[in-house]
Amino acid sequence: MKKMKLVSMLMAMMTLAACSMEAPGSSSEEKSGSGGEGSEDYTIGFSISTLNNPFFVTLNEGAEAKAEELGATLSVVDAQDNASKQASDVEDLIQQGVDLIMINPVDSEAVAAAVESANSANIPVITVDRSSAGGEVVSHIASDNVAGGEMAGEHLVSLVGEGALVAELEGVPGSSAARERGEGFNNVAEGKVEVAAKQTANFNRSEGLSVMENILQANPDIKGVFAHNDEMALGALEAIEASGKDIIVVGFDATDDAVKAVEAGRLAGTVAQKPAMIGETSLETAVKALKGEKVETSIPVELELVKQ
Image (tube, rainbow, N blue to C red):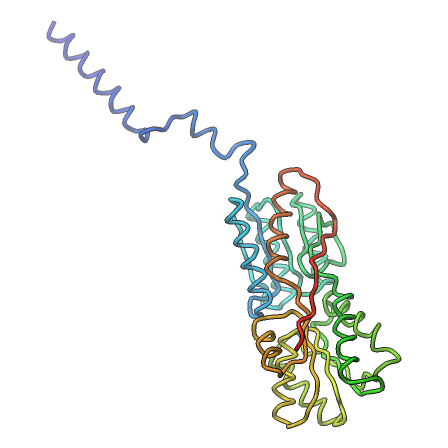
C-alpha cells in the first residue's frame, strides 16, 4: 500500500514538472500558429544611395515612420554613394530572406544586376526616387524629375533674362535623377539662355563648391546656375559669395538648409520633391504589394517651386 502511494506521488511530481516547462499562458498549438500564413509582420529591405544627404535622410525617416505605423520591419542599408557597395548590400538582403526590397539606386544602370538577382530569388523590388535601367520592379515611386527640371529652368530664365550665360551642375552620372533633371532644364534653356558650362559635382556640397570655383574662373560672366540638387546648389552658393559676384542659383529638393537659404534671400529657389512623402508612399506600396493588392507600376509624387 505504501509502495503504491509512493509511485502515485512520483507520477504526480513528474506531470507537474513537465507542465512547468511551458511558459504560463502558452501552448504548443499557440506557438506553431505564430508567424504562419496570413501574418503581416513583413520584413522589408531598403537599400538607400546615401544617408550623407539630408534629402535621403528625410526620405528614410518617412519610410521608417510608415513601417512602424503598419507593423512592418524595415532593414536599412546605406550604399554611401557607391554602386558596388549597393550591389553587395542588395545581395545581403537577398540572403537574409527579406520579403521585399526597396532600392534607391546610386546608378540606374549599375543597379540593374542587383534588381535581376532579387528577381531570380523571387523577391519583389520597388525603386525609389531613381529608376533601374533593367530587371523587373513592382512599382517606381518618384517625382517627375523632367517636369521639375523644367520648373527650375523656367524660374531661372525668368530671373536672368533671355540670352544670359548660365551654368549647370550635374548630379551623379548614370543616375536617372541627374539625367531627367538635366533633360527638363535643357528643354527650357535651349534657345533662351546659353549654357556656358556643364559639369558634374556628384550631388555633393563640397564638390559643388570646388566645381563652381573652377567655372567662375573660366566663365566670369555667368549670371545664373541650375544645380541638380540643393547640396550642390549650396556649395556653389558658397563659392559665389566668396567671389563677391551676384549670381542667381536655383536648386532642387527643398532640403531644410536650402529652404532657409531661400528665406534669407541667398538662394533664388528650389524645387520641392517632398522626400518624406516619397518614403511613406514607397513603404505603403510595398506592404500593399506583399498583401497581394494591386499597385500602380509608376506612382508620381507632386512637385512645388519654393522661391523668394
